[in-house]
Length: 506
Image (cartoon, rainbow, N blue to C red; front, side):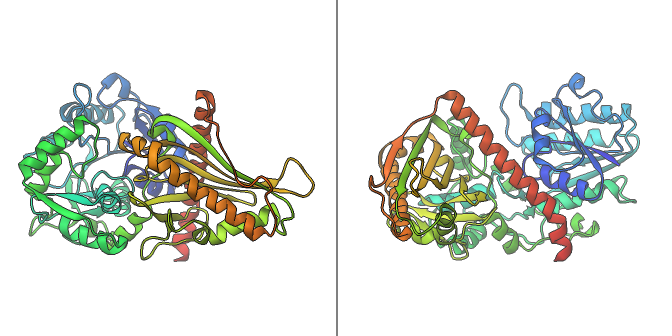
């Protein structure tokens, strides 16, 4: 079976594609940048670059496909091109027409929980999409997921980042409005089943997690996870809505945008007496505490290309004479004892109750920084002579830290140990901080670590720790960005390839 998936990025899209591939299906991705998006997957995935709001650009996308999962949608408008009407409503009409032309057997439309009755502009646009879906002449299925959360979502993930990094967290109203979030993996599995299972034609399935919660209850859980306790600032919904609109104009992240506030107030739970479609599809909802724990270690990388300002490159280096340890053994010290090597006055590794401290491929490390709260890095590379850590969302820097060890160029048995940092500031506020206090903390942290490595080597660095700043030109910066992105993609694809075997073993 070949399945066309629109919007194969974001929180749900990759989970849908992975589950289709594990079932042995081939996938065609339809998105504006499908040729780049497909690189994240290992398997039979082809790209169709196109804009679902443009009928000419979509023509041919469904050719040879047996089914369509229509995920592509926007939850925030950026007029004039990106609007609810153009993407969510008209885009669905265009895709239904393409499915008719290509004689696709099944059309699975991903709507939204509450779209059948909600008054928000978003819900109205999804309701139009449902109406267009029902005109499809062959099999159609409407799935209405609730608040889907996973790595990089713009609500629950953002709320977690705020708990980790801010002294105050704003609440919509009193923070007690109920909603029923669904873990991205559960949603992806349900949509993959909706493509293949008999007896679903003409069904409308509400999909939600197994537990109803609220923003306050999520904050309680996040505070227990992080051991951080920011002040909660309740705001009337109309003030929060106005603030969200103003924040959006200045590019400031907020837990919900103005239209999503309307959705929260309306309620986002499966109505009493209606069945949870997850159960109907045979998917057991992941317990909320379990999925939140997964979320805590799975926020996406904050890439240098996503930062602002110039790229900075710094080196903290020591040429060690008389070391009793080889280059490989020096790197092993970092791998096994990273938390002991970093100065606790500047960085506390393993800052949260369940946080790990050992550097292992794919591991997420949580650290406490002065004036910033808790931030995270992910281990992207571990080789005998190189370790690479990438910053994650919420970190003040967008980039990477590399630990390198090799024979010193001067020879004579000397060993060179080096820490390299490549980064931009994550936000304008971070740019101001990193140019002042942040830069000093960074220098102190890595200089201290190199000094400890020299001490534990048993040798001496006659020149001490040499600190140099040699910012790359535009060509070098772009080359490093591509290298880091490729490194992350290789890790993700490697983990995806190993996932079916791990699942079978468990």
